[in-house]
Image 1 (cartoon, rainbow, N blue to C red):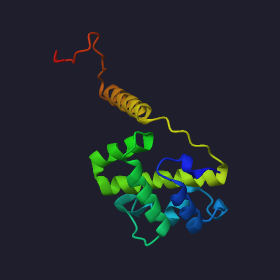
Image 2 (image 1 turned 45 degrees about the vertical axis):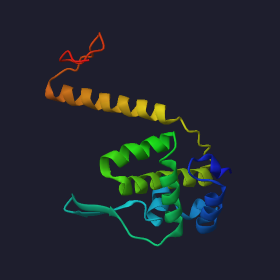
Image 3 (image 1 turned 30 degrees about the vertical axis):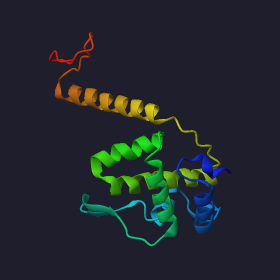
Image 4 (image 1 turned 90 degrees about the vertical axis):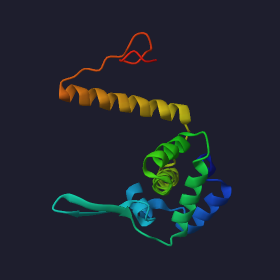
Length: 163
């Protein structure tokens, strides 16, 4: 399995990850178990069905450090993972964006080893387009719930006439 096909994970980091985690992913039933073991998944404190706090646990895991290192590197690339990192970094901060991207890389790593996934990056433009479509769908759904209807302008101007 070629793990270096996943952006951010080069040959050196791939070898170190195999050394830390092993190549037998059957120890973890799902990718969620794997990311929890790495302490890249949030530890939600829930009481009475209400979320009190949510943060990732502290860890000295070298594998988690390697995934965070790869996430920081992939943030500077023109890939879908890089666009994900930049979008989250602008919204919630760089530190949380690194952890979220590291978790996404860990899931790709797990699926590559466990299920033989061949990762093909769609690119930053495709990611941005999918995100834009998702935002528009959510806005349309929300407008319908409130009794409104969104209309796209025909001439390329905004609704108030400003272009």
